[in-house]
Length: 265
Length: 265
Image (cartoon, rainbow over all chains, first blue to last red; front, side, top):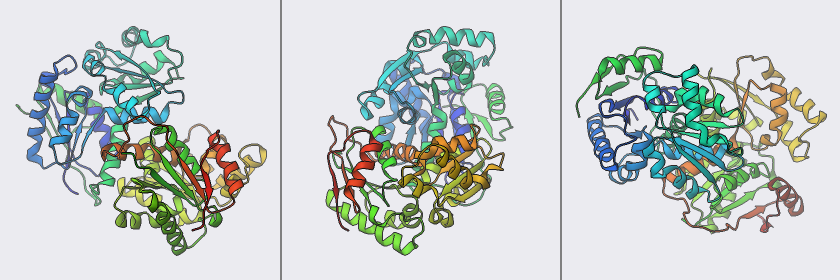
């Protein structure tokens, strides 16, 4: 199927998911919308997150998308069931793929999750994990300092290590935890620092990679894959500052995306 | 949904998939049928594999299964599209999950695949890989000596290392290959030996783990997961020698499966 896949996020974090989607599904076309203007969603109320998410979905309606990826953990935690119930295309969030990957990876069923305050307080990860496997022990931790850090471009070096070390303190005494889910799409950019702080005995799961993998699975099982040859014409939209968004997107993708525009919702 | 999930295989190899399914989906109930009598399928004609596979599927018909897992690479390569077209339940093979996991894992898009003669000559892996990503280079190798070795219980030690080393010779000079798909459900039992022979720079993908992960994904997206609490009552069937099958199953699972029976197709 030729139609594009829609990707929505609260800001730039979901670009890590979009990048993985483009890497694992290079024939598919993506339309990304980041609500940079109202980012972060992590500390907003459920009602606000719901309203903003639906505004984004309605904007994507004009592109006849064949699938919707909610590349934001907070929006997934609060709005996914509602989106699935109301839209007649497959809707994939970032929480279930990370949870399933952690179940596959963990050998002792002791799994940590870090995320924004909204994601952690929603208990979405423990709910999904325990629904599949009752005996899993989940260690959840909100890390509110990490998103602003990434947005400021502090991704490595002593300052990054110091903030990550302080943020992860409560998890560092849990010896048996063998798997950690990065429950926020900003965090993969800090993966090397997080790995250094926690040590190599912990396997780190990036929701972006795992979500892309599941998007690929669901496209295949739903006969929705594009089978021809083409150079996809991706489109990126932001509700915020265009120059800043362009700078971050081009920087993270490693090349210049031709179609980036600013829109109002 | 309470109904069980059917798993079919040419023999005992698919038990590695069943074990992963039970580990990742401990609330689900599985019915496994291994056609041990006519194993291996790897060197049989497409018509034979088709006929045997349909006989197994028809046997499972009496159990009202909610999903079918084809835990045999050869049967997946030859019969999956036909099964999907004719059955009104989701049908999951072992080839696509391994291929998608390799795409996720590989950083340089140079992927090796080992399997039986049937699986390799069917070109099923290169077809799936290239359908998703045209630029992937696939190095395929039939390893006919490995299945008999596993069936004889030679899983480690000098003899195992010698046979694996000889079998993998054609792949060992390909320096850039960063990912190897074990395209046969027997091979995960040789994973430590294969890893030793190829070195740690190669990531090894076990179809069993990846198939279980995708079964979990597809159950969730199809609203087919069992959500309650229960101790599942798995059933195992073999077309061959019962005592031998029981010995291997109990040995691989690490505990005694109560319900194992011998049947005729």
